[in-house]
Length: 55
Image (cartoon, rainbow, N blue to C red; front, side, top):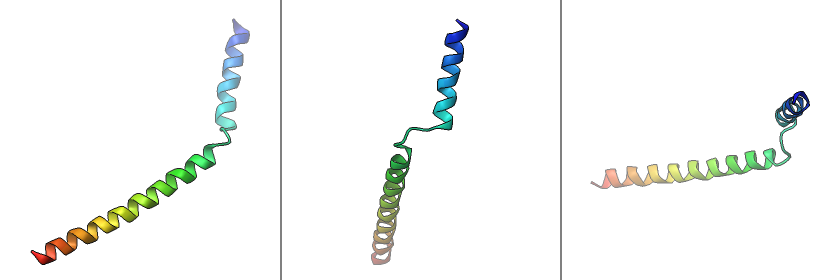
C-alpha cells in the first residue's frame, strides 16, 4: 500500500516537473488563436465605428 502511494506521488511530481513535450505546441496554438481573435475583434470594432458614423 505504501509503495503504491509513493509511486502515485512520484508520477504526480514528475508530471509537474517534466510537463508533456506537447505543452509548447499547445501554447503556440493558444497564442495563434488569440492573435486571430484579436484581429477579428479589431475588424469588428472598425465595422461598428463605420456603421455608427454612417447613421
